[in-house]
Amino acid sequence: MKGKHLIFLILLILAADQALKFYIKLNYYAGEEHVIIGNWFRLHFVENEGMAWGWKFGGDWGKIALTLFRLVAVIWGSFLIRDFISKKYSRGFLVCASLIYAGALGNLIDSLFYGVIFEQSSPITQNVARLFPPEGGYASLLHGKVVDMLYFPLITNAHFPSWFPVWGGEEFEFFRPVFNLADASISVGVIVLLLFQNKLMKREEEKMVNTIETSTEVSDKNQVM
Image 1 (spheres, rainbow, N blue to C red):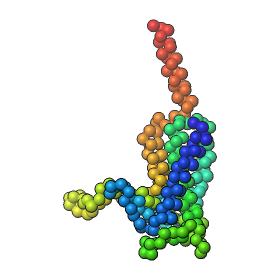
Image 2 (cartoon, one colour; image 1 turned 45 degrees about the vertical axis):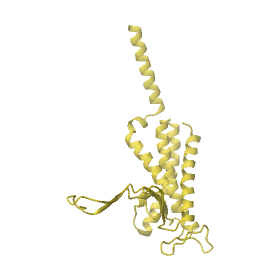
Image 3 (cartoon, rainbow, N blue to C red; image 1 turned 90 degrees about the vertical axis):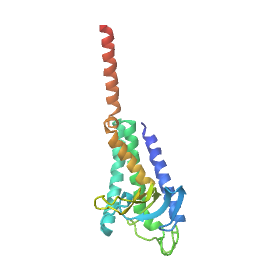
Image 4 (cartoon, rainbow, N blue to C red; image 1 turned 60 degrees about the horizontal axis):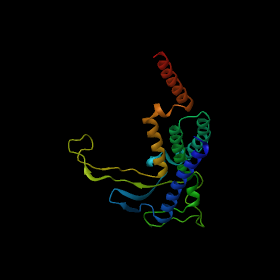
């Protein structure tokens, strides 16, 4: 698979991720929610200072450390994907690696720049953030919050059975996390790699060798017969 195809895939995911985040930032106030399909697909604007799926990582210094880690990971990933291409890994593996890379880059952009270019949105004042406000953004470089909006509450207003350990009788909801396209891209890439790693980790040369060996074996049998 050629590098230009992977670059196109990465840019496509990145453009879709950032376009949706910009739309939400410029049209929703923090905490605003709208039902899109039925009751199970909603756009719910939340921001988080941590990792994917809203996980957090230790305060102000933790935020800086996480952003810098993302930056190093994306730079390293650029060289890693180029190495995968040169070593002719399978197309499926390269696509999964590109999905993970594009997702990491998408969330990195939020962390690096969103605090500088966007105004703070508050659920109390219900203000919609402005882009490049005259008084400056809500945070400095490296301190931007990741924008999440995709919400799929497939099961709501349900309760655990009374006999259920720890949470017996308590209300639960499935699927609770609010995420973005970058999170989804990372998750799909990782899950597919884990499920099909034996097949996807093979390089094109290995497939060709296996094909040649199989063909030779069949030819030898035909000659003996």
